[in-house]
Image 1 (tube, helix red, strand yellow):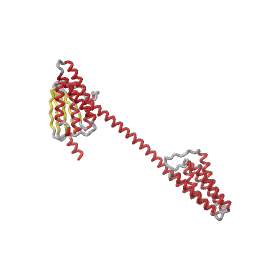
Image 2: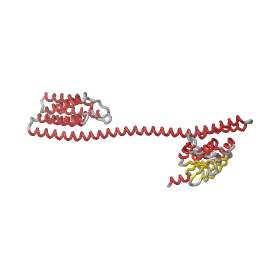
Image 3: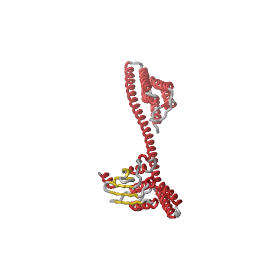
Image 4: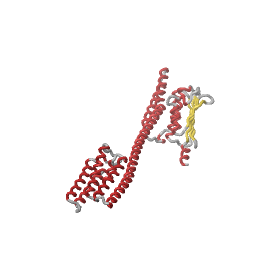
Length: 398
């Protein structure tokens, strides 16, 4: 049952009770009794037919908007019915228990509710004094009833109105907060999707795109060789690696067990051997690991080596490349150094593709740093430094 129906029950019960009191009033004539019943029923009809539709009884509930002039007429009619009953019987002052609250509930604001309350209590007080024959005691009683009723009605009405306004404000703020949370969740989803797209783009660049580049270069070399059998075999191996990388990207979200994968040292050696077969550049590998690295960190280091070798292939014109990996209790250090032509003034910030920039972002995700500089004896040294798993564990414990 909603709030308006509770008021229906309350108004109905009060009118029925007053009708019973009127009928049982032995001090009134039969005509007066039925006149009271008729006036009370008229008050009930006015409430159920008109006033209840315009009651603002629930926060956030829509109500019909009645023109102020018509609403005022309805309120005056209600006061008139109640005053007529009081003029016939002093017991009908009990109509105040529904008249005054209904004025507050039907008024569009306090600017109308307060004056109408004063009018109601004044008119009902005058009707009571009329019923008492305008005697001194009757006038005093009427004045006291009107004054006390006015004070309590206005005080309680303002207090309840303030609570209602507070509830409306809180409902509005809750609605705004709900919308803000929804927008924030949408922004988080979009941000996560954008990061995932960037990750996939880096993975494609670091794996499949590099393998396809190798296939193109090997195919070009095969077209110039009198006996391209060995080069074609390299093309087949590279294509198989690209297929394996593609399958790995598809299963990127699946958990990968470090024990089920090749050791990091063997993976680096395999990369170097393949690079030597493809380019003729000699690759040396040095690995010093004091502990088993997490699989995610191993994948990141392998991707960095792949990107470093890809840059050597495309830009360095080198004959020797050395890969060094060293793990201590403080940090994991990876270097890829060549004896090529050097940077020639190029920096990481000048990179326009996904190569070095993507590598720097990948390293930053694990709290590491990336640097690239000209080597003392010529060539370029790419260095990656990330905190070791041991140091990260100690920091989290402290």
